[in-house]
Structures are given as structure tokens and as C-alpha cells.
Image (cartoon, helix red, strand yellow):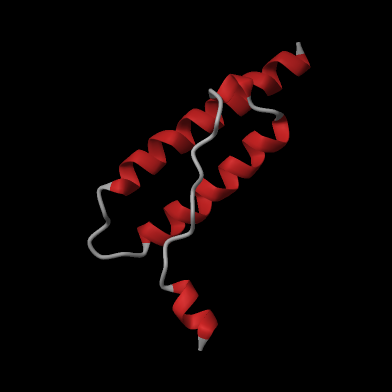
Length: 75
């Protein structure tokens, strides 16, 4: 029963200690995972909480940073 109660709680999303460009690749990856889990959790809520928009905006920024780094490595 403990696992059922834990699944009812929103997954934690720790705000990075540094701006996105200053994060290591691993920190950026982990932050993205946290955001993906939280977005999926809140996306199942009815109605979707307002925090979902903030999470989605942060997720979009992470994706943009990852794509920027990918372009630099291919250049």
C-alpha cells in the first residue's frame, strides 16, 4: 500500500542551482527526466494544474539547451 500512496504524490523537480548553460550534460539530462515525470503526472490530472505550464516552459528550455549543445558538437 505504501507504493500506491507514493504514486499519488507529484514527483519532485529540483530547480537547478545554476543557469541551464552552466549545467553539465548529466545535470541537464537529470533535470529533463524530473520535468518529464512531473509533466506526465500533472497531465493526468483533471483539470490540469496551472503549474503544468511552468513545467512545460522549463522543459522547452532544457530541450533548446540540449539541441544547442548538439548543434555545437556537430559543427
